[in-house]
Length: 352
Ligand code: GAL
Ligand code: CA
Image (cartoon, rainbow, N blue to C red; front, side, top):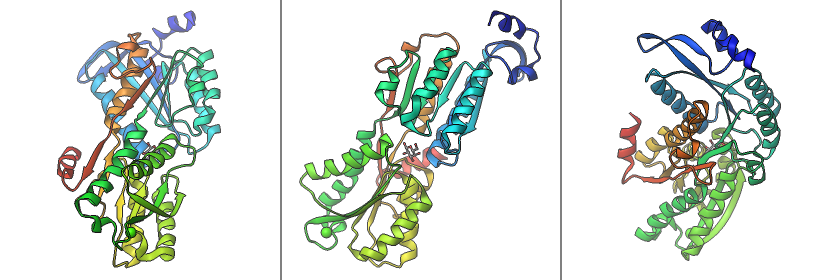
C-alpha cells in the first residue's frame, strides 16, 4: 500500500483514472490548472433504466461537479449498471476494490445479498454507502463503515393514503363512484421483497382502514416498478373489472403512468383515480393534466446529496458523524411531500 501511494505521484492523470485512489494529480478544474488530490467514488446500480434510480444518479453527478468546481479535489464518480444481475454487481465491486476506490456506493440488485459485497469491501477497508435498496439490519451491523441512504417508506404510504382520504372527505362520490360506501381498488406493487414496496402497500391500506374507510380489494400484483408491466396488468384488470375500479394505488409513478396509458387505451367511461409515488416529471405533468390525482415526492435530490456527503466525507477523512441527517451513525432516510393539483405548479416550476 505504501509503495502504491508513493507511485501515485509519478503517474500521469490518464493512468490514475484507471488505477489508484487519493493521489495528487495535475488537473483542470474550472479554468484553472491546479495540483490537487483526486477522490474516486464507484457507484453500481441494480438497473440503470429504472427511472427513479436514474434521477438519483443524475443528481449525484451534478452535485459532484459542483463540489469539484470548488477546486479542492478532482472527483471521479464512476457509475456502472449491474443490469439486474448480482454476478455483474459483484464483479463491478471487485473492480472498484482492485482500482482502490475511496468509497463504493451500492444500489443492491438483491437487498438480501449484501453480505457478499460487505465482505469484499471490508477486507479492502473501503466503506460502502448502500442506497435505495436497503440491506437487512443484520448485514448493516457487520461493519462500522456501512451506510444506507433511502426514504421514509412508511410516510410515503401514509401520504399516498392521505391523497385519497382528502378527496373522499371533500366529496365521497369522486372516489366512491358507485356509492356503496366502499372503495373498490387495485394495487400495483413494486418488486416483491423490496422494502419500499412492502411498506408502502402496508401503510397505505392501514392508514385508510384506520380512518374508518372501507376498502374492497379487487386485485393486487407486482409490476416490478415497471411501466410496461403495469400497463399489461392494468389492461387485464380493466377487462376483468371495468368501471368497478375506483382507485388504482401504485407503489411508484412509473407504474402509475403505465396504468394511465392502459386506461387511456381502454375507452372506459368512468376512469378510476390513479395515485403514485416518486414525483417523476411525467407524473407531475399527469397530475397537472388531471390524469392522476396525486403523487408523493421521493426526494432524489436530497438522497443524492446524502449519498455524496457521506462518500465525500469518508474519502476526505472528515467526520462522518457531522453529515446532516445521519442517524444511528449510519442511516439517512429522507422525508416525502404530497403533490396534488393544488400544489403541483410549485413542483413543475422546480423541474424547469
Ligand atoms: C423506489 C422507487 C421506485 C424504484 C425503486 C428501485 O424507492 O420509488 O420507483 O426506483 O426504488 O429500487
Ligand atoms: Ca364503491
